[in-house]
Image 1 (cartoon, rainbow, N blue to C red):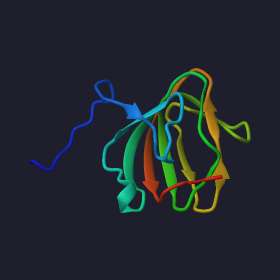
Image 2 (cartoon, rainbow, N blue to C red):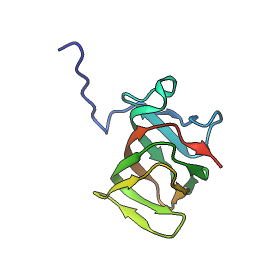
Image 3 (cartoon, rainbow, N blue to C red):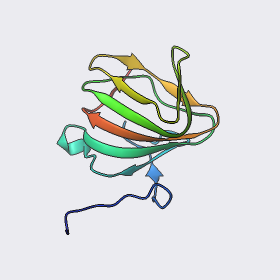
Image 4 (spheres, rainbow, N blue to C red):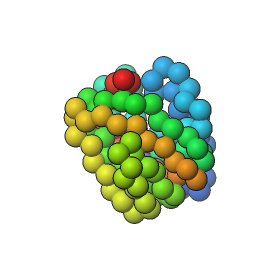
Amino acid sequence: MSKRQIINFDELKFEPFDNYGKIIPGMSWHKISYRKDNGGQGTYVLKMEPGAKSLPHEHTGFEEFLMLRGELTDSDGKIFKMGDFVSFEPGSTHSSYSEDGCLILVFMRGINKPL
């Protein structure tokens, strides 16, 4: 069982989110299987502090996520809440922010391209 990994969301160690080549204020992540050098494939947990905003970006592959805690507001005003599973298709664009902070389990199928 040496290749098994067990994740407890309450005990994660987060690092500053720097997937776009620079640190995004208020965002941090815990990489589970995500690797940028693997074409941006894998899974990570994203934590957004209150008031954090993502950069506007385009999805080059599918990006899917499960809202674990809190709420996330998308650029069109849609609010994602705990328990929502969201899927963005390749070619879609958006940005989002969290007024009160949130925790998200993200499944990436390609590196996002900043706009």
